[in-house]
Length: 459
Image (cartoon, rainbow, N blue to C red; front, top):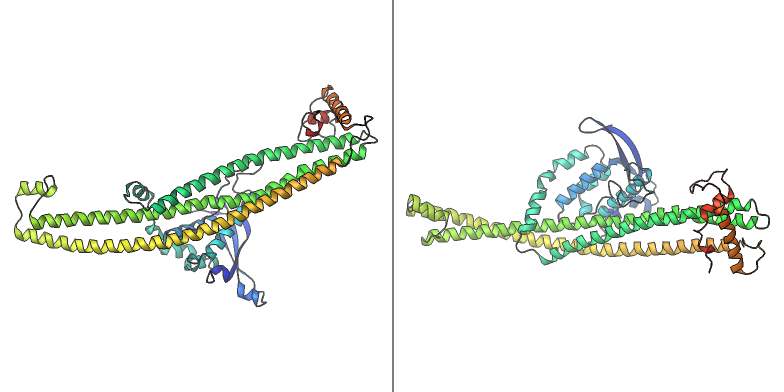
């Protein structure tokens, strides 16, 4: 890890900018460009403050870079890009890919992608990746000149290999099942989290109604006015806190989404191994067929139902010279097939060795990252609960019932509930929950909140 590029340069995606340009079909399009800044780490340690090198890249160029890495490093679990369009959103989040909040989250994800690649001991040394960080003009042409598109395996061929391979490696089969399970579990977790966020947002925001009730109520009370005003303030603070809470939760959701997309990177490694195993089995089958043909020609024995047997019956037996010539050609093909099979065996063993080493590295990274993310999420939830509990304790200290004559707590609660029920049954128009407006009456605001306040339930 000491030779990683991340140890030598600092990489940041510092800014996102909305631009308008022309696409390949000469049609106007709107896209987002991202500013990549790189600065040498050595200059910072020596006390020099040199300006960073900077260039702009589109999301499609990030995609081109990752596709290049996938083709040229098939044994590597290539880090995924952040989502191009928002997934697992709840009602307050926008699904528009031009939404400022979504663009900001994607900027952070693209920076994380570059840091992941720069921290990898193998792909960080790639010249195309280094040029991506330092050379703005002519980079696309440089990538296309490598001809990586010609090396890419077609999806149809990969699907064919999946179903026709006879002796799959058990480790890669288990890894494929693991990646499917990882994707399924994380996607279910993100969907549940989106539903919980929707419900939690509603629970918090309804307390804004309570705050409005207490604030308007305080205007008509003499002895309880200050207490009601203070309680309304604490309810408003509680209702407003959900925005920061869910914004911080999105950070942890994005960390989970990264490993949701990592599952596809694991499957890409498995597909490449299946293709190599399929080619190896086809080469072995072809070699066995040629050896059998050579043996039949040498001994003069023919299979009952074979193309060779049918042609011999139709056109007569071959001459010894013809047979020897075919045997010689087959022997050359057998020799080439044996060399090819040996080469594929060596290539397969090297792929398995290097791929499994990188998979172990990925598992260690995944365990560390997810453990840290879940611990930080739990700490955030504990902090949130303590803060909300503190607001309720402060509201409790306001003693909003001290103006009532009854002295026991049960009597005070009953008297307060009677007052609210009376306000609810009065012939006033129902209040709009979001914004009752300055002309709404206190009784209508009370009617909106009655029945939903948990502290008003009688024993």
